[in-house]
Length: 210
Image: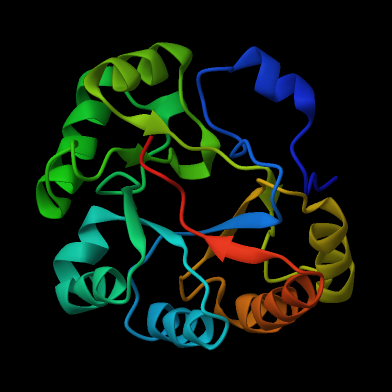
């Protein structure tokens, strides 16, 4: 069973993680995981430009090292970036010292935590102790309110689109993926989502650093 909108009990169990942005305005907070990718990320950037939309890109350090020009393009177009580890590690199955070293390797490619303090754990899987230590280091641990499941090649696109539209609300952090794995599903979901939510009066912003 796919859960497109995260249940409120998760917010209560992990209150120090950021699931939504408090606002009464019709603002949505788009985020993209797993890039940068020279094809998919540029597709996303061009589409966002059409809607004057801003977003946060949680980048994998290994991809930054392979495509530094795409990483710079994200910033040049006025978007935010966040740390998604260097090798897309699962926190649940990774020892703290290894997890921290991988995060720091990615951070070294991005810049200081003071400038780029946003962190999203790959798969959303992070041990409570790891999250506490990262917050102490100065990171904001960003989760999500809406998950598009665009990485699933078996996804029923009409059903998914309906669910993410219905689930979206002021302050929702919405997750898509600028990756080759998600490309075909993303190209069907994202344009329709941007169009519909814009027609409903919503505007798209990047996640604030604090």
